[in-house]
Image (cartoon, rainbow, N blue to C red; front, side, top):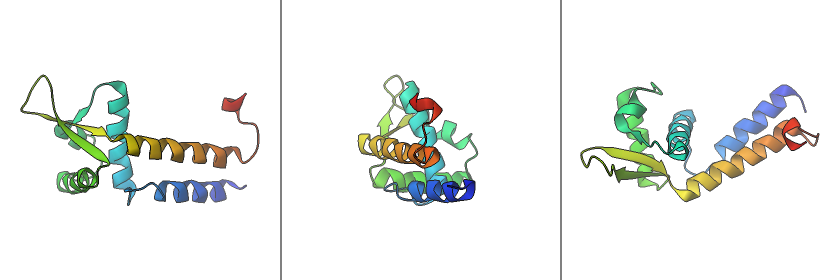
Length: 116
């Protein structure tokens, strides 16, 4: 499989993730998921400082992701004035499945270094 065919296949896999409509959604979900798995959930301010898009755009996308249950909004245990964002278990499973498919696309039936 050629490089660009692989890139098209990867883009197709990302486009199939439920609730992810564009690259801004994807970037927001990846950043929230990364910090969630590291045990240091993101606040809105931290998310805005990542410069994924304008503040209004990030808020709009985040609101939709929360409404659709992809992102979970929770009150910080140590400070009830701030809110943390986490990924739902379903979103994590969907992203892991997507990553597995991308891995197979890149390996294209060959033995990948990770598989050895």
